[in-house]
Structure formats: structure tokens, C-alpha cells
Image 1 (spheres, rainbow, N blue to C red):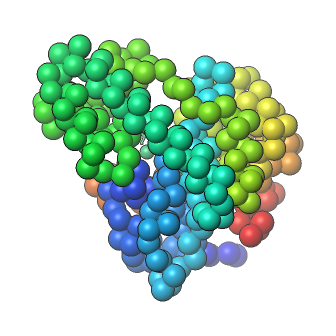
Image 2 (image 1 turned 60 degrees about the vertical axis):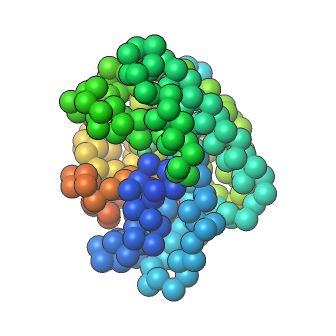
Amino acid sequence: MNSEIIDLHSHTHFSDGSLSPEALVDLAVESNVSQLAISDHDSIDGLLACDLSDKPIQIIPSVEISANWGKHGLHILGLNIDICCQSIQTFLKQQQANRQKRALEIAKKLRVSGVIHAEDDIGYLIDSQPMVCRTHIAQLLLDQGYVKTFQEAFKKYLAKGGKAHIKDTWFDLEDVIAIIKQAGGQVILAHPMRYGMGSNKLKLLVEEFKALGGDGLEICYPNINPGHKNLLATWAKAYKLCGSQGSDFHSPDKSWVKLGKFPPLPEGVEPVWARW
Ligand code: AMP
Ligand code: MN
Ligand code: MN
Ligand code: MN
């Protein structure tokens, strides 16, 4: 039995995680993880800034890119990419500029909805940290007492139907797949069951994802139910896609998500890590 712990999805404070890349890797080593993908939202800046080569763990340089598929927003993991690839670096800078523009639009809508200092506060976030994600804005709303929970911040303001929701304007799925391939990475559809699609729609997505050059599905992540996991495994086998797994770790404060903790990849699915 392979007892290696391989975690192929995690975040640092270069996007919406709370730890530095060094602290994340130290925690992964403590948790007996032997391979860790650092996969920040739309950023490889943490990987470019930090030398992690002396850590006793295999780091898989990765990224989680936001993409549009019709009206749906998706997350696409690029695993084991060449972070020196100029094309992906330029692409991600554009994506970060889109994020900044979106943060300002959210700020305006929040102000109009009665969050009085939203523009100053979000402007400060933009100036003071590597990237602004909706998670940071949710935290701000919570800290200032506009909502009682993080979930409420999304429901009331930031998610679809919320007062400060901005429609996703990411690059199309096709372009995102192409850029990851250009950087030599494996293209993985992240957490497929979190998009709120019915199974027919999701199957259509998996078919199109494969046709556009997608490599695999993230099948194992915290809280996925066994029925969904089996369905994803069936599709992976049927469409000759490999399988990936990861905790999607953001912070030690979220004690219900731990590095390396998720169900094992089902039998008969080719593990993505067999490809590197
Ligand atoms: P962004 O990429 O800036 O749109 O932010 C997306 C991030 O916000 C996700 O990666 C999650 O970490 C978090 N998120 C999205 N929707 C929710 C939600 N309904 N409740 C809590 N966190 C959420
Ligand atoms: Mn996140
Ligand atoms: Mn995601
Ligand atoms: Mn993630």
C-alpha cells in the first residue's frame, strides 16, 4: 500500500490563505505530507518569491485559475507548472489586474449598500497585500460588524444574488486550459461538486473540459460525499481523465480542513502524480 501523503491543493497569503509559503510548508512537513502543491488563486508570486528547496518535502509548483464557462465561474488547477514560463506570468498579471478592478467595483456597490468606508478600506487592502480576494472583503465586513458570520457576508453581499455581487469576467475555460498547457502543467478541474450544477450539466462540462485538452478531475477533497466521489471516478475512467486530490487548505483557523486529510483516490483511477 502506498502510504505517502500527497496534497495537491493549498493556499498561502499570496492569495486568500493565512500562512506564508514557508510556514505552510513547515506545517505540511509536520503533517507528514511528502508532496504539496502550492496553488494560490491566480498567482505564482509566492512560489517565485520563496526558496523552499531546503525543505524535506516535494513542492509541486501550481496555481488555481478562475475561469468562465458560459455563465459559470470555475476553478482550474494547473499542477506542476513551469513558473518561469513568460506566457503564464503575463496571463496571471492580467488576471490580477481584473481582480483589482473587480475589488473596486465591489467596493463601490458596498458603499452604495451602506458600508460607509468600503472604498477606503478596500483601497487599503489593494495597497497593502499581494492580492484581494472576496474572502478578504468578507473578513472586513465581519470585523466591522456588517455581518455576523463569514457565510452571511457572501450570502448578503458577495455571492450571486448579493448586494455587491459582480459578475465573473474571467478568461474563458478554453484560454485557461491553453495557458496551463503552455506552462507544461496538468490541467485539473478543481472541486467539481462545488459549482452547484446538476449532474447532467456537470457531465457536459466534463466532456467539454476533456475535448478542450483538460487532463483530470479533482476527485478527493474534504467533505465530498461517497456517491459524488464514485460518480467523478466513473467519469474519469470513461473520459480517460486522471484523478487528483487535495485539502484546499487556507488556514489553521479553519480547524475542519487539515493538510493531507481527504478520502483516498478510488481504485482504477490514474493518479495525476504518476505523470511527473
Ligand atoms: P474569489 O476568488 O476572490 O472570488 O474568492 C473566492 C474564494 O472565496 C473561494 O476560493 C473561497 O475560499 C471563498 N468563498 C467563495 N464562496 C464562498 C462562500 N459562499 N462562503 C465562504 N467562502 C466562500
Ligand atoms: Mn480561496
Ligand atoms: Mn477553488
Ligand atoms: Mn482553492
